[in-house]
Image 1 (cartoon, rainbow, N blue to C red):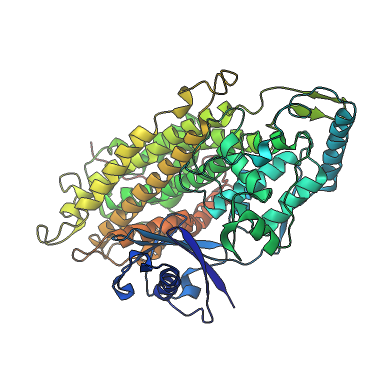
Image 2 (image 1 turned 180 degrees about the vertical axis):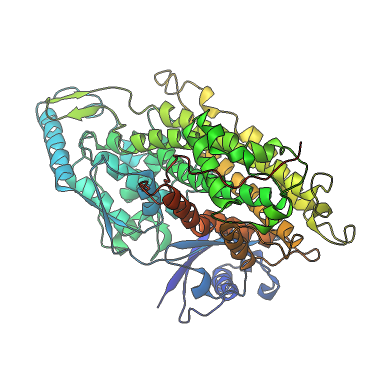
Length: 627
């Protein structure tokens, strides 16, 4: 029988579900019944039937319908948030199934994609034999140091009271289970390198906790990003030691010792140096950064598809994407974006009736928001590639202190815990990816403004009676404005801590968290543009665009119906946002881009599903412009 763990205000409750065809509304009310039963004042809820919920997915915050069935909208390891706007009741729900596949960690080959998948609960973890051997050798050296009574920082000096020190939890909301899984997986990967001095027994217990999805309470705030992410990693270690709070799909939130006990696991008992090994490093910054860069990569390639659709609706020209132009300024990202536009827009490969309808118009060139997409989107792609390289290097780096070199028979103190690398990179990521929203908002303006298009004002008939996309455009503008503040780099700040021992810090934790927020705003703005572009298509019918763009239109229309008269728009935006987060727009259009490349350049073979050849195929058919 599936069981769902539901968080109501300050409590986690388990709700068994005999019938997966029950609705989301049923699940919420069942949880509320249990919550009210345990409260003398009914938790301040007087009439349960009067409570109205908005239901969202935690990842991407896509709205769900209360009448949806559980089996239709909840997948394994999928988290759902139910909120009551008036009473501020918030819940989380999860249906969990233990994964059957493993990822082998050796401290050297984990990628940001792997880490995000580990966060989603798609894999369990095991160590490679080589990693186990390195861990054992490193620990043997530390045991020798202890036996010989040598004075070595963090091994035979200080730090012995960590196990009894509880760090305050008032440091913001806890990380979601997905992000805590990422944090724990990354910490395990770093320790698997064999330079931290933890015992194999301790590392195995961490892996057992990960595989059972026993996850510590880790506040999202509190790290300055130097000497590592001390506060969040301390909370991560605290639960593994049987102290503080911990969560698992079976138990919900409870005292850590009881959660571990319920899974037949033993708490970690710290040995010399292991305290530092568990809390010293950049894993909080890096794990959140891995999610940010993966989502940035996904939305960047989908932004090209959305912009191409907008260009079609606004009857733009393909001339600006001519391959010869981009060979003269051969930045990789610029060339890639131009190639994607050529593969999606009017050509002998994919003819467009819309493009044919204005082939002999007298417009010579388009506005920058359309014409300069390769240049603007292109640098975003190159920025993401740069940041991803740094994040993947950081994922497989030893970042605690001191380092244990078993082959040299010594320990060395250094500064690998300093978070400046991922902090600077993630500030750069936020600045770079924001531009996708900035230029998208300007394209939304062109779609909505009849003086800039041949479309009805705000993309709706009977304007005045209907406001159409007026407020949706305001929402996009507001998100872009928020991003301008969030793009202020946090890594330029530094506050001295630890009695001036840690006298320069990276502030990388905030860099990672705000980069994630910027990416989410970008996703939402592009969701609005995609909705607006599809609405614009309605006014050009019966003309059709190219096959791949028609497929994108069909995908959106399978989720959101056309805008005939005003209605509540938030669910539409959330639904299309979910399509982008799930990369469904890319999954629909990507194969057409790949086929275009393959047919024009037979020798080219993409190294990955998202890496297409950048060599220029023949230019598409060009609109003839009259002088």
